[in-house]
Length: 89
Image (spheres, helix red, strand yellow):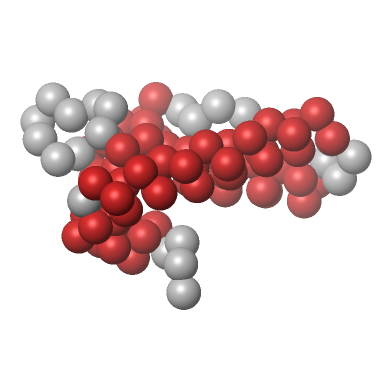
């Protein structure tokens, strides 16, 4: 259920702010969003998997807190990121 190495590298290349950037909030939000999308697809098949659903809810809360932090610190990159990921309307 984890992201593959190729998927992770692809996300890192797309959202990195510098050459060696691996832990910026933009990258973390993008990785969490990919995991949330993957888990959402998992629940289409496995409806009664309540343990993984709890993990999904934790990931959603973590992403929400990370986005709130990014919005406070750098509003321009926040708006750019939510536009790229399609998170807000």
